[in-house]
Image 1 (cartoon, rainbow, N blue to C red):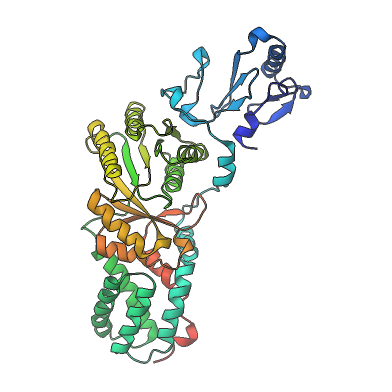
Image 2 (cartoon, helix red, strand yellow):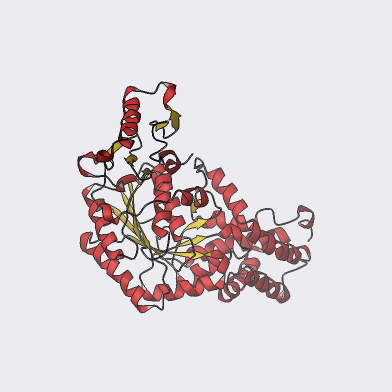
Length: 444
């Protein structure tokens, strides 16, 4: 039973049931605690007294949701972390200092529809290897069939071999420039290593792909998030609609909360219907706090409140969700610049990262988006989502080669723990895992 379902009690039903600290409705005849019996009796008395029709009783559980019962209207559970609405002196001390009027109601259906149960996140290297292998299965299947055919017919290295290799790489969406660059460098490397067997050639291809990825970045560049040396780290997420920004933020919030960080979310996408509610559900599931605003309100105001709160209450990380915007929409890009100015005014070194979220299933269109966004704003890293749903996994290498911007995280599945820090070696080897038929490797 969800929190919303556990907290919804009508005025007629109140005398027969009450809500326990665990959020489960129990009959009053089951000998509840003294305070709960008093509450049920109070609600029953209120239903027969017209002059007390607007009285409010608040019951706070260990997870700090509040159940507010107003006679004559349905009772709602507003389990929104740090943004619980209360009235008068009944407000819990843990409530966030944000205006109650800026907190939209959370719809229970959103939780059951968009957020499956979160499993414990594995952290071992073996789990990363398995997830890369599974998440890149579609790319490996398409890429592998072509590469298998190429290497199975391998006799010796000649121009025809490299022409076929270029076509295979382009088919995996590594991009034309990257495919040509890789094949050119392989020509020299194959001769240098005197690679004659198909297995030797495959090993050279894998090594060269990792090397080229590393060469495309800045010196001493890291795929890890850039964090503040003091005070909260502010991460701004940008991208077009539908790429998975809000879901990515929710998964990252879960990850860093599991690592012991104090995480705050800012719901600055105030325009897309359901965006705030969706992020609010992720906040509950990840057990982190959130700052929200009214629908259609100024997103810069939400960012301002969130930054103030992050500083005042010693949060480690602030993740800022923004509305989907096309890079050629001047007014929306100006709005993004305004949010960045507010962040920098409050924390001079922030934002510490501007992460562009891209949908891997769009292939070369994702590369086009990345180019235009990089021209419009200071993108510091890429989050590539939905890699498990595409055969175009080579887009990672294309983006890296053309933009020289590191891929920070990749989405390899739908579960909450399937968003992982990008590991170039794991990625490239995941593309080649189990591709070659051992029977074909003995050919000279």
